Image 1 (cartoon, rainbow, N blue to C red):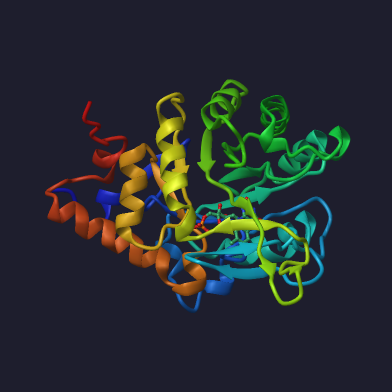
Image 2: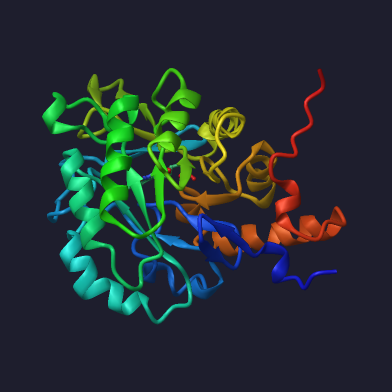
Length: 308
Ligand SMILES: Cc1cc2nc3c(=O)[nH]c(=O)nc-3n(C[C@H](O)[C@H](O)[C@H](O)COP(=O)(O)O)c2cc1C
């Protein structure tokens, strides 16, 4: 029998993690904001909030709306910019024994390359590419909804970094498997999925959209079945590891993702409801493994039984 700690240890594209539970970018700040609630040293990896080349103030107006079993957000990537992250935040994060993954967004393919180069420093375990943002050079088409744009971002980033490159797929596409194949061929080391689904809410008294940005990204339990389905589809067509996310609140939710083919999972919206969700889910998975007489979490990956 392996020790309870080794049961959850995992390596994703060379990132060594104590357990396969990560945080979803944008839902856990830079990690330290949650340090009163969670022991950061016990998390698989901290994925920090979306970082851009220059500081951003984010969107005006209402940025969050609660929806049935979920939430909509249109934060607009508010962040202090990559230089501030490196000079002021990363030095503080280095005291924790946890891999730090930086989620980046660019306006152009070249900007993603610049960000990757700037972040190719000691203390950063990997970069995660948020491609759910518009390409200003291509008339605003979202990088992650066009296979050529998504692949171009991956190639540019790979040219500019020695770190593992994770690309976060957008669910707002017709064929998620096709996107996954395109980014794997372009050299991505891992895929994380899913980012939020575009939605909107209308105030029937004012007849106005609730969110300042009109539309926002839907997350939370409402999206989980879509996310599990997409992970399952992608797992059939790529060899690189998948980090699954979308509505995970409990260990059982996370286990669905492992069975569908994810090698690790991330917790996003649940952090707003239960700030120690990452630790609770890790503990719950361990208990499940013991109950099922399994010795390692990898014994769950892709084990879905499909009756034909
Ligand atoms: C408030 C908020 C902010 C987010 N910011 C980012 C971001 O900056 N970059 C990114 O790639 N994903 C971002 N996401 C998406 C999450 O990381 C995650 O992919 C998504 O919410 C689905 O997981 P969940 O249902 O567990 O939240 C954000 C989500 C929320 C709710």
